[in-house]
Image (cartoon, rainbow, N blue to C red; front, side):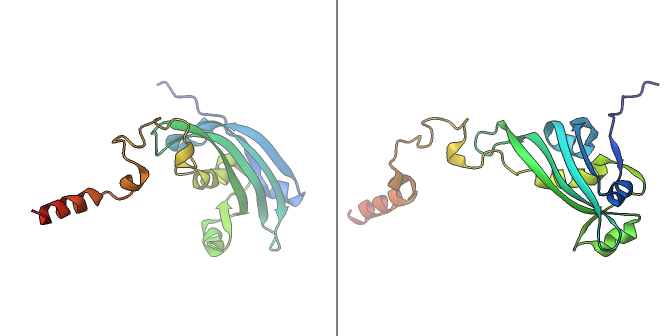
Length: 175
């Protein structure tokens, strides 16, 4: 049997890092993020995290993860690269029951000992993806030139699509 090579996913121990006030920085290949890679095309993800213990002795991870994703533009239907930054602010707990007890007030993930970095940041990356690539329809770099007004109408006329009906109705009344 031939097995596909699994991506190498860096792991970290949030408890150990938090107990000494450590930080963790790395670049992770996009194929390590299975759900993210199924949604958008991504090259790499940069992760920069700081760890501390919260008031209840739980590991608390804060930081940011960054990537450039290809997202579809709603105007030209082409993919455009978009800078995405996901903010991380999560507690690392030992069980799903603890997660349920903390949420929705605090974000929490289950992690006991070494955990893949993807488990800590992938949800935040997915939620940080924009719905559209071009922030402003009027500045889309791929927008059709000169096709905004294909009938050659002036702006007032194009903003009143039923104006022609009023003219026809007036002509009909004058007969």
